[in-house]
Image (tube, rainbow, N blue to C red; front, side, top):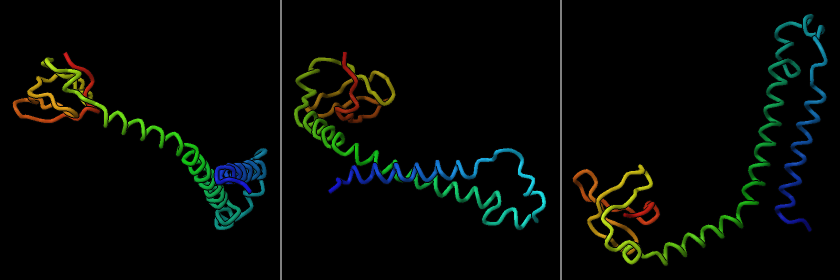
Length: 144
């Protein structure tokens, strides 16, 4: 029995193979003189330029969808590990113990140094242009 990851990889490969086969069948080997004799209605029908473009777009969408599903399935284990690591950091961080006594903090969202009013365990209260605001630990880039 195949796992879902193997199934998704197989589907993506099948979709890619269909697109490549379609491209090989419909690649222009030179000027198509037969199209000149057709009416505009016939040219733009199922086998006309617009119809072929729609067919190729449908196949390309299938390839993109299959590859996106495969990428997401491959990323799930990494995302779970990253989430666990972030939760661990959040649980263990103590800004007050690390930066006690420092008067300025680097805010990573704008790269500016802001005056510290109060250090908290998971955040810092700063003076932001005359108003008090709280910056979470994830946005603290350093202190001086």
